[in-house]
Image (cartoon, rainbow, N blue to C red; front, side):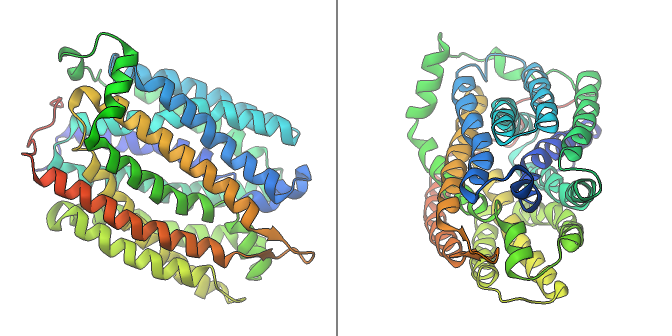
Length: 411
């Protein structure tokens, strides 16, 4: 099923929105090697900075879930995007550990909901046969943040200070919000269908629905790996592998160039071949590569880049088909609340994983990270469990007829 012109525009716009949110979330981890000495923080404190965003986003998602399907999704998106911009501005102005911690909490309260609203809009405007492709396009925002955002942010941090990337992101986010307000049409088809009388009962019914439990569990399992690996990746590369901090942008640029092409390709393959088989293949690649990555000795830069590219290929081959598959699980009137709760579980799992990683990994006197291979063992275990939980989702979806048209026909 080809995209209409408006669907193409919305897909690009949603990817642009995700770019700002993902970059804001991701930028803290690679700047760890700069922020920790600048603010005189320990690994446990830095893990708290990363997890603060996650826990506040989780709380926001739960509070929002009851109301997520009661308003125009465009208006909800704009409201939370405004709060996200203000939180990011605070991050750019923070001067201490406690100030940055508070700023990340505020940013998480607003930014953590945006991803769930984006997924609800994508589900409303695209048929199941198109969702692998549109999610693949949206996921290119992750690669774009690597190609453009992270290298530029690290350069700005090295050239000026770690505050500079957050201030630049405020400008990017303002542009995205203006485009949404100007060009996106209201997304209101779900409002014409019967819903529970109270927001609380809407939340309760979404949680009680047994068909939602396995997708929720899979989200938690997949999130654990990413949140354990990312916070200390830059410190691991610099201190353990002997890569100069000035070379970090090269790693992100090359990896991003590959992944920005892989995202749409993986989405197209998932639509044609099947989402679960692609997920299985990506999981196998991820388990092998994360084991290799967490046991690396000091290596040349080009070898690390090659390993990074294959690792992210496996990660994308898991996340894109998984997200495309679970869009078909909730009813149209519960898509907003399902995605909000799912995002909250993702953040809770990620926050716990970040805190756990901060206690597993320790800094040696020479600056190297100790016990980093244990991170790889945990990720392999959660990936194996996710194969089982998503298989249960696949079986449940196969037992019921799938819709062929989007709930809200695009103009």
